[in-house]
Structures are given as C-alpha cells and as structure tokens.
Length: 169
Image (tube, rainbow, N blue to C red; front, side):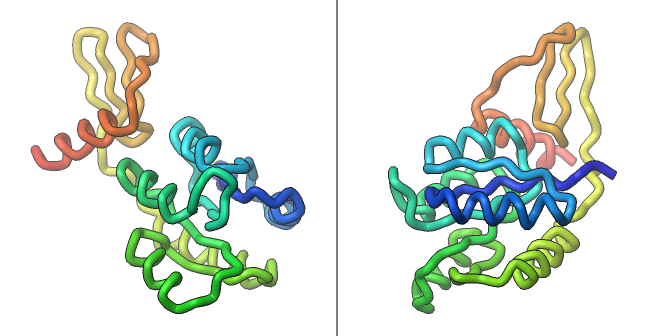
C-alpha cells in the first residue's frame, strides 16, 4: 500500500516542522506550503490524500482557500487554528472542512482524527479509464493524455469532466 500523502498549509515554520517530524515518524509522506497560493498549487499538482490547513495565512484567510479547494476536490481537510469560537468552527465545517483542531494540539489526537477521516474516505474508485483513438482519460487520477502526452487541464475543467462522466452513469 502506498504511503499516505499529507499537505500541511501553515505559515509558521515551527508548526510545519513539528507536523513533518511527527507525521513522518508515523509513516506519512509530508509536504508543505506557506500560503494560499502555494497551498492551492500543491493541492492541484500533488493530489494529497489529506490537507492540514491553518486559517491565518499571510496572503489571506484559510476559509477562502478551503472554498477554492472544494470547487474541484473532495480531499479531506482538517483545519488547524488558534481560533476557538464556535462560530468559526461552524463556518469552516459548513464550508467543507472535515474536522477542526484548535492549537495547541496533541500529536496523538491529531493522528487519531486523521486516521478516522482517512478510514471514512478510503473508497476504491469505480471510475474506469476511458481510451479511444489515442485519447486516454483517467477519471480517478484526473489526468488526460493524448498519444502518451499529458495534457494540462485546469481544476475546473477536470471537475467538469468527472461530473459529466458521473451523470452519464
């Protein structure tokens, strides 16, 4: 079984280092991003299995990034934040976060929450590959190739293709 890929989006170097050390010790493959722009790019390019998202980022608010991710991805997202107001938690959960953990947090609790979400989200894809006349569409990986060459698509176009395929079933 392939290692689970986790993307940590947090502007605090110490938090990223703590998460990387703790998660890699448990067998996760960890990459990080320091702001919304890097985070969005990493979600699109790396296709992580789970995202840990801080709310206070230097180029905006994590809620905005979460909303953008949800436009094209169902990747599980756990919000990590010092904010502990119920209204903040509700807004993030309703916007598509899978969980909300208040900083400071214990690594054991975070790991347990991550594993619970990953257990619920482990689904074998039922989307087959489509192939004809040199065109191949991998719906699970959200990749398109023409005669073996990968075609770059924006997240919106990929989501549209996947949605259209599901509607025809």
